Image (cartoon, rainbow, N blue to C red; front, side, top):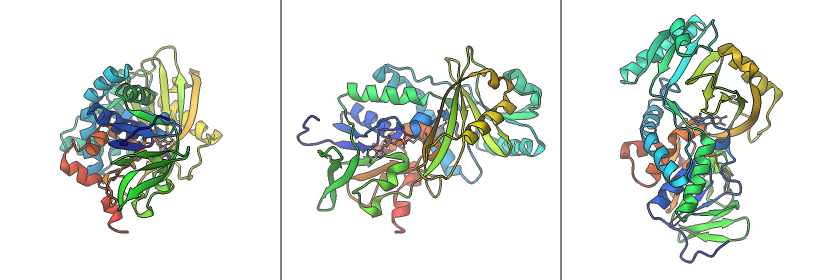
Length: 376
Ligand SMILES: Cc1cc2nc3c(=O)[nH]c(=O)nc-3n(C[C@H](O)[C@H](O)[C@H](O)COP(=O)(O)OP(=O)(O)OC[C@H]3O[C@@H](n4cnc5c(N)ncnc54)[C@H](O)[C@@H]3O)c2cc1C
């Protein structure tokens, strides 16, 4: 690895969608920036469906998360356009909304409540009959009884996002160290850099820990600064179709669990995702795959005709309160950007802005890592 006298202004531990977004925006601002990761873009960000869906993901107890999601969603159009310019890759940003469908009376009632809740917040959410749903998406099952169209929701292809971020970072002079971080270097209590498994030390005034589900287990960091992040396993399937089967994201509750289908412009259809508390297990199981395909077929019977392209399992970085941890820690110079759980792709633009001090102070307070550190 090249020598970097004077070190970096900002060094990011972890090259998933979060770490790479922070690093790209920092490099864009002219900061000397590095990312350390033995396998960038291979974690949860590789598995993710890419829904940017704060409205259809919302639950009544999660208004702070909704605020973060909406703030980040509004940044996505310019984020995607600037990334396309810097990274030379179109990330397949589409804003045709999510259609949430219901089969039974309970699910219909839940969607009606969600429509009222979203309407109360001034968010676009239109209640539809089964027939109206099928008019929008003709491939939907005849048994769909109604739905909710969250017209503001969007989606991207996360694999294109991370590929674009890696190129953009490199073009702007950012450094990618393909090695695991094995320790934090400090002097008089303040951060001076990190140690890498390859034996090198990288100097940095500011270190951002963005190691996804592994953020709580990174070696050689002060234990009190490590975040309470746990892995939440998600299995997800990619199918291939000669022509797109759907125009927009479709989701619903089948056999008691939520399933969604995300169409890509090239005919790929993503079916996700399981939610499992299995530690760091990333095996794809026959049962996981079977449940996803069974539930997807209930929503859109035609999926069984499609070619199976890819099945993976990723680890979402979950937190005790489902909110991310973004901002300074008790260790001077050490920042966190982690714990994005089900919404890391959605929250990437806002996370980068928060890390660089470019976002609203109220939003920053919601995500402060100190909410856990102060209790330790
Ligand atoms: C099946 C599935 C579907 C999802 N769908 C969506 C969706 O539709 N929309 C959405 O917004 N979100 C979705 N998510 C959530 C989203 O994927 C995550 O919130 C997001 O990818 C987290 O990004 P990250 O960069 O923090 O973590 P990751 O992408 O996991 O990256 C962490 C990186 O840290 C590196 N690392 C670990 N330890 C070290 C170390 N010691 N030194 C250096 N590097 C290290 C790893 O190699 C890895 O590359 C989904 C997740 C899953 C699993």
